Image 1 (cartoon, one colour):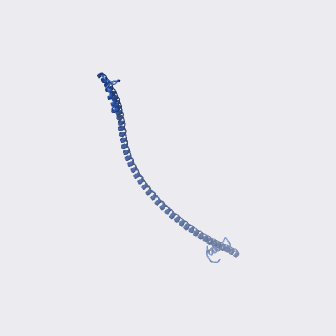
Image 2 (cartoon, rainbow, N blue to C red):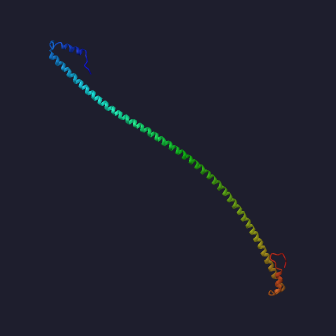
Image 3 (cartoon, helix red, strand yellow):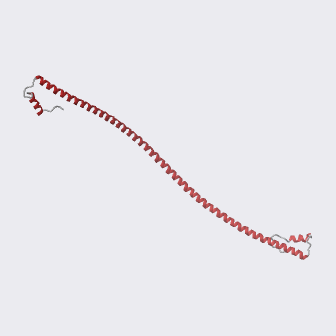
Length: 201
């Protein structure tokens, strides 16, 4: 800072007029005094120059750091923008793929549901048809059993009737005294023997 003027300067002006006893300074003293002031001002100027130089150096250093940080920030911002764009594109692509996948799965599920309903319906029809066939076979078996029982009863009756007739003929032959070894009576008797017939002996 430049030296302040005013009262201090006035005092100095007053001192220029004389020495300690109020006498006038000599030219050498005045030169010496001016040299001292000049030296003092040069020292102040050097100090202030050094301080200014140091401040400028610090300022340049901070400016370089600021520029470097600003450059890094811009690079990071550009990188962030690029990463954001890439992630956005990737997200949109994944979302599209997921939508397509979900749609395919929904179609697959619906197709499987339709096939399951169709299979259940076919199974129900098959079960009904099986039950119908089983009932038909059971009815057929029952009918055949009834017929077989009827045939067995009829055959039993015919067999009993035939045995009875044979027994009667044998008894008749014994009562008439016909020789069992003779061919004619036996032939005659066999003419009257009819299986299942209603003729009498």
